[in-house]
Image (cartoon, rainbow, N blue to C red):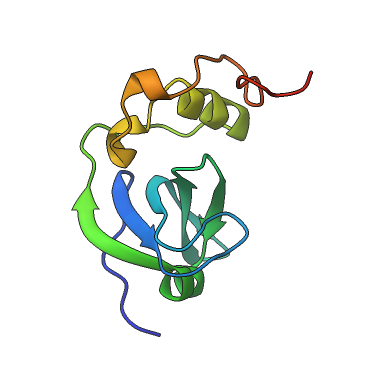
Length: 118
């Protein structure tokens, strides 16, 4: 396993290959740094809104750590996945994905995008 660049909240990554939560070349951003059973772990949310935790091996296999940090997100405090989804849909992570706020569906609830079935 190669050495992983330091990862912090706001660190930008690019998917090297598909996984259950990201597509190749999809941008992602770290929203949480944690420790599980004495090992480091990082949670990422991707431009599609999908998210998951990654072990050091997962990062090595699936992600390219760019070494860049999105300053607009470094102060993000993860509380729970419901709030994460709300924050994503409200544009909290848009600066990391270079998304104009007007292009994100105006919704307060995940799944309420135009065309979504009730």
